[in-house]
Image (cartoon, rainbow, N blue to C red; front, side, top):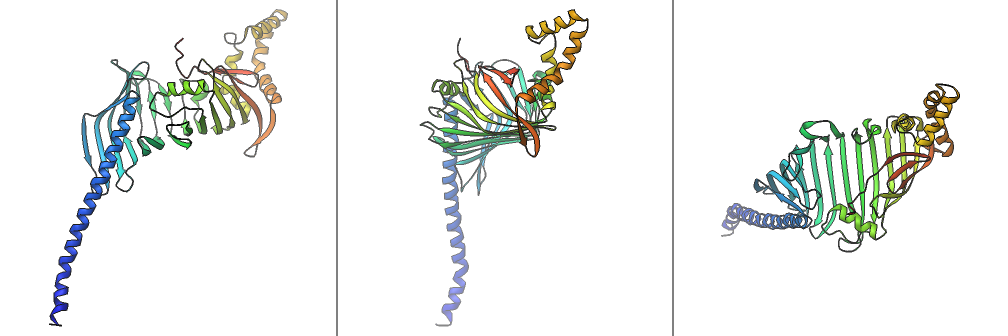
Length: 379
């Protein structure tokens, strides 16, 4: 008997292992089903939040898979209706694939298939966006999101019918997180924008040359972060006397490097107010990029400046045009003189105030542009 018991025990081990594997597989399947349920509820909750904000997501076909370690939801023929936008917009893309791990069911990673077509509701495509790779990540519960991010490789934004490039970059990253408060009660939100070789020639001639940017901004004064359009959110921020703090900003265009920090608010008309302290190395290249020659041209110069050039022409024909051509270097020297000497990344630089006065942008004494209203005032 003593010799047979060890033999019998050895014979039972394969059966025990098989049983354990079956039990483990059952438990794992149950765990996957539980994680899948949590993830599905997270996705449904997220879609419900978006629908409450007027953003309706649809799929031509929907497939769920990913067992045993992931849960994936593949939406082919994806569409979004932005009904809260004015005018309402319709977005369509090839497909969207949402993925979550069984171990982290409240962390959703989404991959987007290129291209994206954007149009006013019921009209032809107005903008087409292409990219090499695009994904977003959402962390937290639908009722209490903690952070979100989107990363895009080689985005290209084209006008109607594949027209001129409105925006292009090697890399576009946008990250946001709640640094204090809660979604329901006075959240303070930090957003970080990073661009590599970004250009937007249709916006401003200075942006035709690629720019690298790293900007961190903190939004203070929000009442909550309930589902609503950003225009409504910014309107609430203005009514509460909130502000947008630029805690770090660095931009580089060729040999020109600039950093900035400060705070901005919003006027009742929804335009930017405030001041940033701007430090620029190689200002001589920066000002012409802003269109200094156009600022001095007869068509765009101020009436007082044109009158001064005209008086010179009356003294001696052609003297006014000569002065206009040489005014650029004089203005550069004047702006340098009005700023404070500084050092930036081991290079000589100048520190100047970048002011926003109800949308009008001025660099030192120069008016360089205008920022339109960030929300519709209804006026």
